[in-house]
Amino acid sequence: MEQYVMKGGTPLIGSVNISGAKNAALAIVAAAVMSDEDVYITNLPDVNDIHVMLEAIKEIGAKVVRPDRHSAIINGSTIDNLVVDYEFIKKIRASYYLLGSLLGKYKQAEVALPGGCDIGARPMDLHTKGFKALGATVDEGYGLISAKADRLVGTHIYLDKVSVGATINIMMAAVMAEGRTSIENAAKEPHVVDVANFLNSMGAEIKGAGTDLIRINGVDHLHGTEYSVIPDQIEAGTFMYAAAATHGEITVMNVIPKHLEATTAKLLEAGCRIAEGDDLVTVSAKDIELQPTQVTTLPYPGFPTDMQPQMTVVLGLANGVSTVTESIFENRFKYVAELNRMGAKVKVESNIAIITGVDHYTGARVDAPDLRAGAALVIAGLAADGLTTVDDIKYIQRGYEDFTEKLRGVGASIEKVDDERALKKFVFQVS
Ligand code: UD1
Image 1 (cartoon, rainbow, N blue to C red):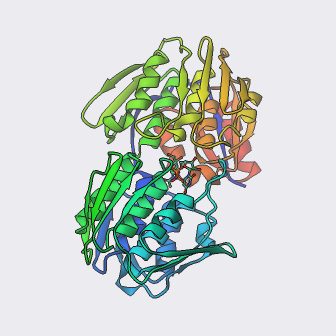
Image 2: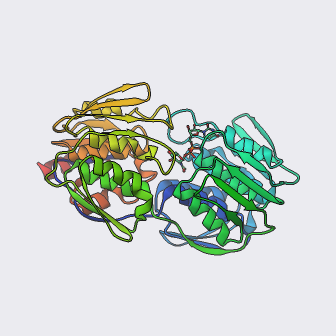
Image 3: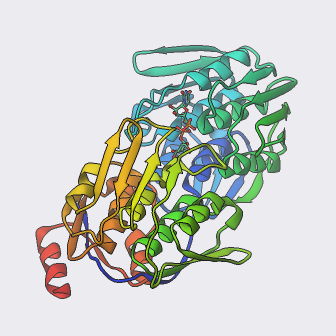
């Protein structure tokens, strides 16, 4: 079994290049099949979720060429199957984006009901509400969702809840619908904007992405394009919080600082120093005492739920009592028991974590319960005294490119090991 093993207690210092945004790239790869011409995507993160999505589109007949590990040329003209197998869906929830893209292009699609990180009930009612409003018949049963339409016709869709997935999926289904569609109470996340920009570069007519009202003029066909994915704000945030927790200083490079505003605001409240450049942000927590604060996760531009576990790890080392309120997903505190085994004092009451800061964490063997919580436990391990091993790293590998290499680049003592012998070798080397 693969594990991360690390020796903590060293401030992380240096700079790290941030990869393309996983969540934007997943939707962009799914949307790319909507053209019958070559679509050249660059700045793709080399992570497992993207590999699975590329396999999924190959499986339905799309051509995929990989000029290098960060780019793909996708051609959807050869698609001959509109059924996306459970094999892919159980690995990545985001393969539901193929429902929107295939329905939009072929007026028909069938996708198994999604799996993904278990962070609470993750219904798809808003996605299907949108597809139905556009004129599709949607059936759910036997673990499948199928959507079918003779014609898709533009309409006004109000989303009862802000949902990234539903906004993107409906946007994809609507770009080739007849007439005008508006999506009200749309998600404003940077990756929603990125997917809209990508579709527009293929000839779609989408306006207002990044606001809560997206307007789409249907077009007949989408042409080829060349497009670079935006940087990953959550990967950047994870390294920034690693600097804070270890009292180090890290510069995240190749980022869009505007996308990191909520993340940096909370670091400032915690007492860290921040310096921003055009495409970089430096976080310094050298020689400071971390201060407690209050955080509530909210849709963008609020504090991202995908940074919630990392925030708890930082505040667990602050001088006082903090609260972290999770308002998006109800089951996102599963890591707390593991963190407490490392000496943290966190109590969860309903959707609020009450965190009493401790002076330091102590190394332990812990389990990564999901992607972001797994990364947060690695940060805790790097801040902790002694050795930590993190199990179940398959979750972390879904979303962080070269995680150990990048962490070693800022001075971390961390290794990926796959057997007892390699683990013992690491322990011997660091002791
Ligand atoms: C995406 C991200 C995920 C992030 C989340 C919130 C991807 C691949 N994943 O997930 O990393 O944590 O946004 O920023 O981009 N909801 C419904 N009905 C629906 C859809 C959603 O009630 O049909 C609810 C969800 O249960 C949740 C809230 O809406 O409470 C937000 O979920 P949503 O924004 O859809 O998250 P995802 O797109 O699944």
